[in-house]
Image 1 (cartoon, helix red, strand yellow):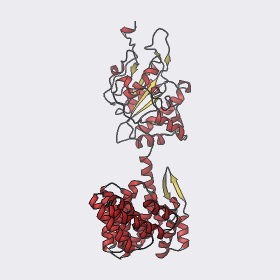
Image 2 (cartoon, helix red, strand yellow):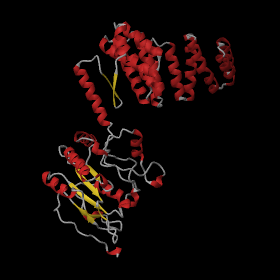
Image 3 (cartoon, helix red, strand yellow):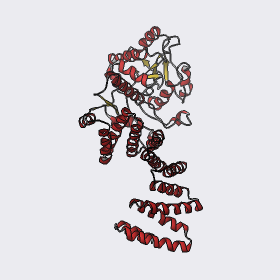
Image 4 (cartoon, rainbow, N blue to C red):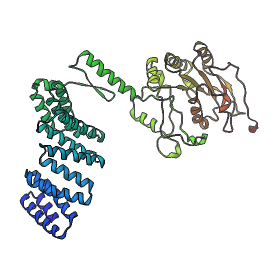
Length: 476
């Protein structure tokens, strides 16, 4: 009979559908099949509600409620309670049932159903001209639930309800602003009926067609995903909205820690048990190509099988001015900057020192913390007899580190000359070493992994010595 009821209903034969449903209920009552009765009662009550047969719908829903409580079916009890509420929503009993249904759904973690019940409660209070504060409280609860679900259509409906509540409270200005927000959300969702309702409300509170049209056609300025209105506001409102947009943009900025690694390697090779799933990348460049930026953030070791493994900085930072670099360092709470010139010496000393000066000019004025600057080079003469120390030439960076340290004694400026024969194996470890504790990094800490990784180190708090040769006994 339940199937026959559904077939008649789909065929728009409502009378035959209800007749078959009542016959089925009579049979199930004789068999004392309460589960079967409940399966028919709920759709029958909903069908009667659609036909506006409220008294009959309430009677069937009450019978269904009794069964759900006997069988302890919590979700079905909430659904039945909501049906009872809808049969007489403009009464105290109906509103109480809507609140009870919302409570049941919320406890069972059915947020969408709970939000619908709060919406019905708010509308019921408005229909019976009850306390508008209670109505706006129910509407706000529903709005929060829809926001948690990310349901934009539901948010728009609840915003429209909130506007009606504000109108009942005689908060006309707030109601107008909320109605405009609801109308904008309806338009984004493509809901013409909702847009018409919002427009009807605005016309009812004195907004003209011209005002509504002007508000809807205002150009929206896109600021990295943040929409700000560019016309129709006072200077104070514009300033406030621009500040909010800037704050949100700062929170979303992609400049992060220090450096794009020349290559990625498995941290377990360097004694790290767990390196975490996040990657922090400081992009010293405009990075207009979002696809490249996405690949950079997804880069993983070769053996992981996902993402590309090798990326170079390529002196992108030379295209930026010091203010832009400083903005990136400040926004990302940067603690250290690594300038890897070990594969970029073909650019020449002038280009290298130009970006170096910009970096120093950017990091020195930062007051809330001291940002360290490290240089990684292999700008030296290869000697065939060793994979260790070589004759160094550092594109003026050695002298620059000394001068910068003397000029800014509270900052660290260091230069690390890496053995090119071990560079590929060692660079990932060196990166993690350099971005570690900024004031307690002894030179001997990086002489490990069965090979010499560094020939000299310039530290901000260490005496400047001439280059020395370091060799390991095990290599000869």
